[in-house]
Structures are given as structure tokens and as C-alpha cells.
Figure 1 (cartoon, rainbow, N blue to C red):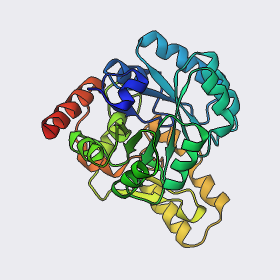
Figure 2 (figure 1 turned 180 degrees about the vertical axis):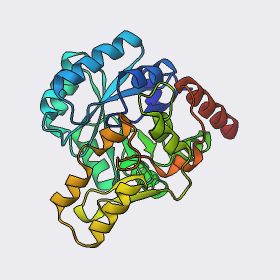
Figure 3 (figure 1 turned 60 degrees about the vertical axis):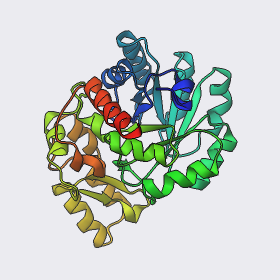
Figure 4 (figure 1 turned 90 degrees about the vertical axis):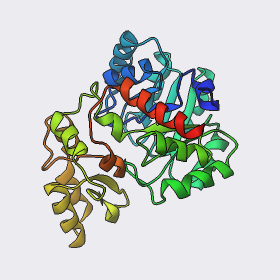
Length: 306
């Protein structure tokens, strides 16, 4: 299947794996790329040398294109941006800010730059900065979210920019992919469904929590701080929301979540850890390999688009 995004990235299918912190490491990225999509290594707040090692390990597992997600709030973002160039990575997605200060360096190195945006204004800004495409991510997604739903955001971004748009947020099967394409997307970015992939290093308790979730099991915390996060409800989210309601300050709330994502992903603490997942979790009922996920999605998509 050919779209502007598959041509731009040199991939077989217009499916991109989200650059999820602690989840999107070299095993998952390589598996997605080997299955025909674009795998991403999530740099998150990792030190530059850790990111370099992840890139090297990923290249040992695949000869297909893969990329790195650079979280721009990372204190090490500038060093990570340089590592991407030094290691010859050809695709970067970015989140939590504007990558404008790194754009010239990346462009000179032939890097395709795809920022994740949550508003039309940010999409326009990224196009002016030289982005090759944007990911329009609705609030249905897991992790840090914006305020607009995918169905409302995606067509508005498509109408507002001349570069290709990738749909994200609440997309987990071929039906969601078809809907995104009908709204003007040229590819989709998938996060939550890849969390439960066989190749994902996520703890089995975390995967089980996602697979057993219902449509109303995700909650948004952090609204009072200006940094809303969607995850699956548990003891930690209940306590967080209670403190927010009582007007707790930022530091008290931060203390509650410090290290909680790692605790959930690596140690399987699904009671007091942060189990980031999108609203699509209620649709995901089984664990599959990345190839099975992509093949199933493309089969559903092709049947609908005939």
C-alpha cells in the first residue's frame, strides 16, 4: 500500500508505532519495522548514551527503517538530537514542544521530522518550522494528552496544512484506521495496541490490565497542573484525583507519581503504578505479535476501503 507517508518513510504499511516512554525500546521498534510499519524508540528522559545503545541494538535486529521519538522537555534533548544524527537515524518524531532549534541540523543530515501536535495552531507552526509531516493526536490517546478528540482534530489539521497528516488517538484496529483515512490521514500512529504485543517488554500484569479494561476504565489525572495524563484507573489514580480535588500543590502530586510509570511497565505494579493506555484499551482483548497486529489491521482496513 502506497501513501505519501509510506513513500516518505520507505515503509510497507502506513502504520507507525508510538514512541511510548519505557515501552518503545529496541525490541518493539524492530518488530514493528520488520512487520512493515515504522518502529520508534522512545527516548523519553533517557540519557543520550542509552538512546545511542538502543539505536545500535535496534539496527542489529532490523534492516528496515525505524525512528526515534525525542521528548523535547527532556533536559538531555539537545544531546539526544545530536545522537540521532551521529547514528544515522533517518526519522524523528517529537513531542512536548517545538523542535525548531534542531530542525536545521536534522535537515542537513537528511532526517525526516514529524512532530506530534494536539492543535491546529501547533500543526501550522510545525509546518512553518520545516516539518515533513505531523501526527494529529486526539485526547483519546494514552499518556500526555491535549483537549480535542481525534475525530474533531484530525480533519481540521488536514485542512490547515499542506504536509501529510498522521492520525493518532483512539485508533487500534482497521476500522479506526479507515476512519482516520476518511478524515484525510495518510497514515496512523498506534500506541496502546502495541503495548500488549508479544515483543513488548511491558510486564504481563500491565498487558493483562490493558486487555481486561472496559471502555470507561481510563481516567485523566493532572488536569489541575496543566499536564493531563490518561491511564487506566487504579489505587494511584484514585488517590491522585482525590488530592487534585482537595487542591494539592504540584509537588505533592508529583511525589505520588514519581517513578510510577517505570514501576508499572517494568515491575508490574498495576495498583500504585501509572498504567498509561488510551480509551481504545476496551477494544483490545488479546496479545499478539507485531506482525499479527499489523496484518490484522491491514486486512480489516483493506476490506473496508474496497
